Every structure is written in C-alpha cells, then in structure tokens.
Amino acid sequence: MKTQIIHLEQNDDVVSVRDKMSWAKTKRILLVWPARQRLLTRDLDLLLLQRHAANLGAQLGLVTRIPNVREVASELGIACFASVSQAQGSHWRRRTLHQKPKRRTARPDLRTLRAEVHPPLLDWLAHPVTRLTFFTLGVLAVIAVLLLFLPSTEISLNPQLRNQELTLQVNASPGITTVNMAGSLPARKLTIVVEDSQSTPATGQTTLPDKPAEGTARFRNLTTSVIGIPVGTVIRTLAEPPIKFATTRDAVLAAGLDKTIDIPIRAIEPGLTRNLAADSLNAIEGELGTEIAVTNPNPTSGGAERVVSMPSAADRTHLRSVLLAQMRLQAFAQLSEQPSEGDLFFPNSLVLEKILEETYQPLEGQPGETLTLTLQAEFTIQYAQASDIRSLAAAALDAVNLKDWRPVTSTLKIAIAGDPVSNGNGTTRFTIQATRLLIPNISDNSVKRSVLGLSVDEARVRLQSMFPLASPPRFKLTPAWWPWLPFLQFRIMIKE
Image (cartoon, rainbow, N blue to C red; front, side, top):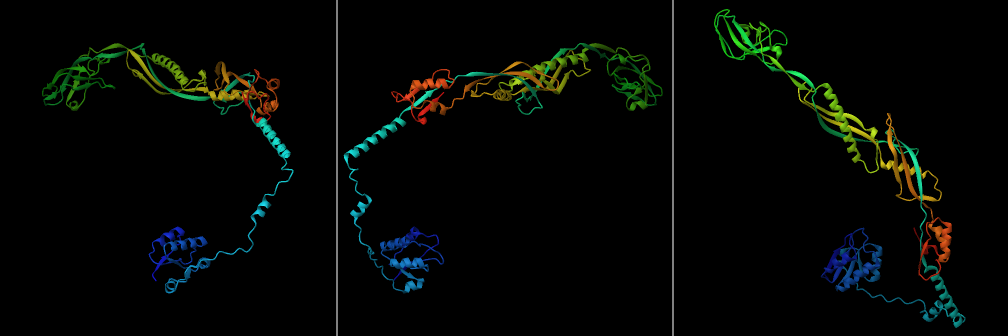
C-alpha cells in the first residue's frame, strides 16, 4: 500500500507536524524521527496526531528509537518500526480501542460524604432564642463598626506667628570661597568692556611752514659740450640734513669751459629755514653733478611760516581723565543691570583693569583745532550674590535656638543697613538686617490624640490650652449632626 513518508525536523511541534500530515493523500502516513532528537515526547502529542490521521482517513505509523515514544505509541495502538524499509515491507496493525479501566473500589455513597462534610446543627444552635441573640449581636457589631469608621472630622488650625529679627555684620572678600556662618561670604567679580570718545578744544600753538623761499642759481659748465638743464633739477646745501631747491624752467648751458647761466629756483619745502645766505647751494643731485657746478650768488628769500592751534600735553592728560571718569559711570550703570535681583554691588570696588585701545586724533605733534580721544577699557566690580546673602542670613537665623518654633517658608526678608565700605585689601564690609516669620511646631498626631471622642466644645477648649493659636480652631464634622469627634485618628484631618 502506498505510504506518505514525513521526515520530522528538530524544531517541529504538534502544530507543524499536523500541517505536514494534512498534505498527505495516502492511506498510510509514516512519521520519521531525526536521529538522536527527542520530539513529541508527551502522551498528548501522539494522541492528537493519531486523531488527526484518523480525521484524514489514514493510518499513522512511526519510525523512532526513543523508548518512551515507542511505549506511548504501543499503548495507543500506533505501529512503530526501526526503519523506513521495515515500515514499507510490514503489515500495519489497526488501532484497538482500550477498554475503560474498571474501578477497584466500590462506588462511594454521596449522601454519607455530604453528611461528613456538613454535619447537622446542634439542637441548641437551631433554637429561635439562640438565633435571635446572635442576630442582635451582629447588628450591634455593625453599629459599633459604623460608630468607629463612619464619623470624620476636619480641624482647621490658625497658629500664632511671630517675627524673628537679626542684625549681622558681613565681610565679603574674593579670597573667600564659601558662605561662613560667622559673617563671611565670597565677593564675586563681574567684568565689562566700555568704549567711548570725547573731544576738547586745543589750547596749544605751533608754527607751520607756509611759503617756499625763491632765488636764482648760477650753473657753470665744467666741460666743452652743450649741456641741457631740465626743469626740476635739484640743487642742495652740503649740510645735513640738506635744504633742497629745484629749477623752475628748462635751460641750456652753452658749450665751453666756465660758461654760466642763471636759472630761477624755488625751495622744495616751505618755511623760514629756506631763506639761505649767498653761496649756500653748492651741490647738484643726479648725473649733472659731474658736469656742472652751481651756487646761488644772492640770498634766497620769501620763505614764511604761520601760527596754528595744536593740542598740548595738558590737553591730552585732561581729556583722558575726564573720559575715564565718564566711562566709569557708564560701566557701573551697565554692570548694575546684569546681575539678578537682590545682588549687592560694592561701588568702591569698581576698578579699571586695563586699557584695550587708546586713539588720539590728531596724533601727537600734529596741529588741530580739536583733540578727540577714543578709549576702550575693561572694568571690574565686586558684588555679593543674593543667594549667598540669603544663605548667610538663613544660617545665622537658624543658629538661634527656636525650641518649638520653625520658620515659615519664603518669608525671609533682607535689608542692607548703610552703604558697603571697601578697604585697600579688597575686603568689603556691610550690615544686613534679616527678618522672617516663625510658626509653632504643632504635631498632627498630638492634635488628633488630644481630641479623640470629645465633643466639639471640649475639643476646642483643649486645643486652645495646649497649643499657641491665633484664633479658636474650627471643626467640620461628617455627618454634620454627629455630636462627637471620631475615636480613630485616621478619621481626623488637620488643616492649617
């Protein structure tokens, strides 16, 4: 008979094997276990596969050497073989239905078992008086539970408040790194760069060359050739530094030794110093100096100077001091805007750290009606941070023995008494006045314990006598008609 052989894999389970069996079109399905793999070892697995094969109208067979699988297959009537060839050449036995196992003991009497589990009540327990008594006790127990757990109360307390004040002398220094309860705190530093310019009229005077001197130069031929003298030929004195003149027109010196020609000249630079005596110009610049000799037979004249305004050294010093004073005010104003609210500046600690840029216009030694100075400077100032001041004040206030009182959160206020005073070593001293509100330490548990089971009036009198209250306590009972406070603490809520 034709057989459908299905080789199982190590990851197969009942669901995957049933899917593979569903594709079989033969009357016999042979499942082959992989070597040394333990699959489908549960009794239920083989039973489900056998039933699925029966639904498909096929007979199931196994090829496996796993002892417990073969044992279960034998109990279910499934044919087992050692190899595929043996399965194909052998007759498969049909599944035999197992008989239902016989009971080894007698069937139990259900009435007897029920009587053993639920024995009959005693006569006195079934008596009406007994039942009424237990019912009454149950009702009373329910009422007692309601009396304990039903009532609740909210107590509103208004504790007294009192002020705590302290005046403290504070020292701030850059050398301090942490807040010290003795009155020391860090002096922090803030830096800013300020740039500004200012002008002032010049008060000094100086003379400047105004007109160039003019005259006549006599050129003498040292050769036998004609020599051209172009306009702009430069002649000068022999002294150092030389004074120079230039010819104002072209000229031709006739050929012949000691031939001469007079040519107009003008000083290259203006000024009185260009008015020279006769025979002061004796040298020619350029190649012509080896062919021609020169002199001025008459003095040069016409050189002049004029008086102009020029910033003096005093102008520069005064303008610098005024501008720096102005920039200090600007630096303090700008620095005051940067820190957070509550920071305390030390005005006397404002210091000019360095000049980054300093430009005068006009430059030193140059004339000008107005002197303008542009400065860029770096300033620093010391200040006490608001958080440091608050930490110091809070620590100093906490150092006072408060006994049964505690501070109210966010009520700390600090005022600066007088102006900070800075000395030469960088330490600044100032005085602070710190105030805050205190509230009594009232324990919720002590309040609850003191009023358990009391009436409202009794509880009010007791609380006022035990705790410092600004006004009588208020009670809100639930239910409102209930006359006493609860007997359980967790049914009482305290509200301040």
